[in-house]
Image (cartoon, rainbow, N blue to C red):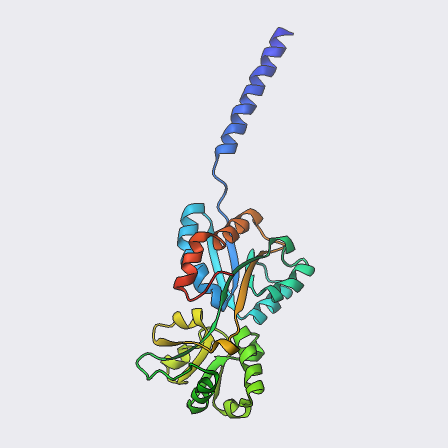
Length: 259
């Protein structure tokens, strides 16, 4: 009996040591697939290297318009974390495509006006001045509303409300996604309207400023974890990093504000 008890104690000690060793091992690195609406991509990209260094995880970042991302998710595309507008996340949460309780507001961004660097800056200080700048432009670039980009949808509605839609349509350069201000660099347009964070991401573009406050439309971005995330804890760690005070400083540099 004494021998049996000593054997049991020895086995128990071995299991304790093994358990301690396992508990102190680093968590396995994960590959986190991030789907982000275009305006927020510069923020995710800016923190990626530091996050990967601190956690050992690897980020795979893919961006598209909000509408296109919703279609991709509803079509069954795999992802771990998505950054979209709160309105776009609501139906995804109802369908369990994202974890409803994980939704967290991250930032907001205003719509701005840009010209090619070195070109004269138009007056956009008032609604009337902004309208005059639009009508005087040779070609105006903005996100194609049909692509689901939030700024494009808002602008097309405002053009109608302002009574200038018929005059803007012939000169409109509709961009299906990506950086609208690139159309300034290649001379397809001489005025571009897009989220400020997207304008600042184009080296050859010059931000004139935000559209007038009376007609400004902020887009809010929120993050959520996939209902089928391969590593929910890793995705949660990234979401926490995106919501951190340190990232708030990055937002300012990228032309965005806290939510």
